[in-house]
Image (cartoon, rainbow, N blue to C red; front, side):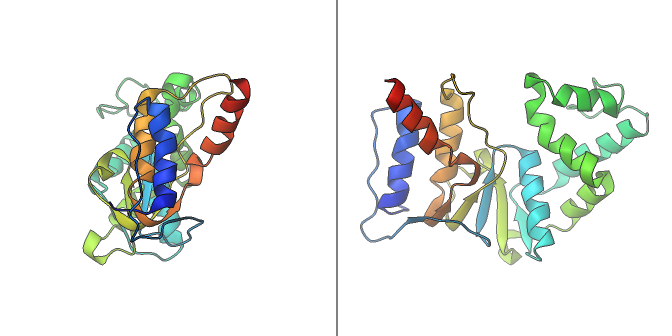
Length: 215
C-alpha cells in the first residue's frame, strides 16, 4: 500500500465512477493528507500540453524540473506551430492538416479540438521560442526538484507528494463522467503516498453531491 486512508477514500470515489466493486484501504502505517502544495515532488496532468504548462510554472518558481519522457515531442510541436505561424505549413503528424496557425486556433475552440486548447493558449501567450526554451531547460529526474508527467505516463510510479495539474475538466452539468476519463483520474490521484493536491480534480466533491441529490 503506497498511501494512507485519506487518499484511499479519494481513490474509492473514482473507483465508484469507474463502475467497479473494488475498494481500497489505506496503509495503517502511513498518514495521508489532502492539501495544497506549492512545491510538490510531482505534478500530473491529463495532456502533454498541460504538462508543459506545469513545467513553465515550476521554472518560473526557480524549480529544477524533469519531465517523464523528456521534452522532445513538445519541442517539435512548438517548432511546427512556429512554421504554421510563418505560413510555411508543417509535416508534424498532429498539425499537418492545418494550412496555418489561425486554423489551429479555430479548431481548438471546438469540442473535438479541446486537447489542443492548452497548447494553443501557451503558444499564443508565450510564443514558440519560449516553449522550446522551457523544454531545453529540463533536467534529468535525478536532479529535479519536481517531476512533471501525464497521468498516463505515471502508471506504476509513486511520489511522496503529488499535485494534479490544471487541465482536468469536469463534465457538463447534466453529463456523467466517461469511464475512460474516470480511469485516468484514478491513476492521477493514486500516485501520491503522503500528500495529494487534487488541483483540477477537486470538482469530484460537487459532482458526487449533485448526483446524490438527483438520486
